[in-house]
Length: 121
Image 1 (cartoon, rainbow, N blue to C red):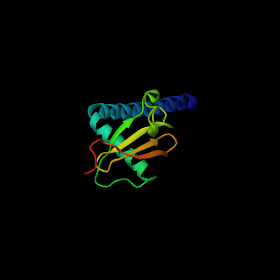
Image 2 (cartoon, one colour):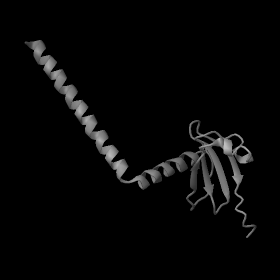
Image 3 (cartoon, rainbow, N blue to C red):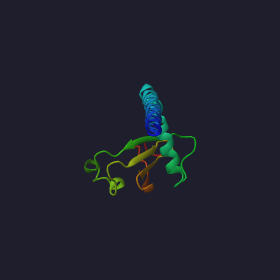
Image 4 (tube, rainbow, N blue to C red):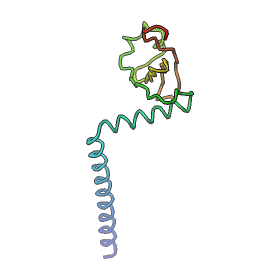
């Protein structure tokens, strides 16, 4: 009889924990799907913070962020000589600077002046 109560208690506790986890993750998923722009802003903010711990970034400017998705198309450009798919590029247009970042190893791969083709101002 004591064993039966213990089994029921363990099963009840397991069910309660599973349901709590399911509700939490469902709510989290629903909030992520409801505002993809907020997700992108959060990811950009985290990326800027991570890179900012490694190098001094321009102040008062939010970069345009790109992800290297096909390194083969970029291999003729010196800036991308050591790039791999998944690397991030932070482009600071006003400061005319581009930063190639490896998010897996948390390393700055390259920093280069940005040539906008507009000539000197």
